[in-house]
Length: 356
Image 1 (spheres, helix red, strand yellow):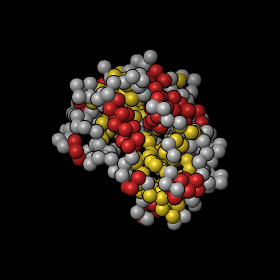
Image 2: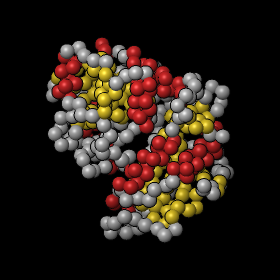
Image 3: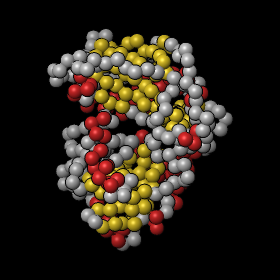
Image 4: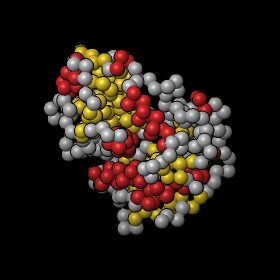
């Protein structure tokens, strides 16, 4: 268990008067969590301090060799005013999987969760009250050695910051158009596709800009070997309801193992759906659309929870889904998962962790 010291900010920021204008990741709370790692000593000096810039030498290795990982989580306020987290131990486990792949030290799950809870408790007044809004939590870890040699660092900094964020769908679920990327790739076997590290996101920006110029909201990535099988969308995992069955890419090293993805699969199987985790060729998806068997497509992720898809575009061909409207299963999944997260529905799965 961590011994966390707390230094409160002498001057608190003014909280937004209109939570409908929060946006995403633009405003930050009064405090942040910091903890240092030193080789031979391990993690030490866990502390909550006023939010401020990090003083880093220009030769700090994270700037040059990208030893860094992060997570994305949320804290939710219930109608009764309680504050709660959603499956934080899953984020901790994924964080450590990312750390292992990038040669960084793990953080014990209980310490990770304790740190998140401690910061959210200090910042609980920042957790929004409005429907659909939440406190976004960004834990991250960076290498802090100074020098230009290429090797695993001996010093690291673990940081958690928080940002009140508005409802992702301010006017209800809005189905999106997806561009299937067949030139660039996001990941390949043996690389870092399963990690939540900045390099994966940096490498996806160019394809995302291309899709945006063409009028699409997101990129659907194909596998990096044959460019044949669907993997994931830019910021989400993706699922296809074809002829009553649910298909999604397996988490075998090239796909991010999403916490929302995992939760959705559990719900679907509880409801009696057959969920097939494995290869699904984009050609078969388009064929299913032509035959009227592609019933629903939706992305899953922390930010949007569920993102319905109304169109897939591949090699100049468009597959239209559900008449451009959200499908009944997609809506049920969204209502159920957000109901659990915000405390509107009972948590029968043990997913909710109160911040007390």
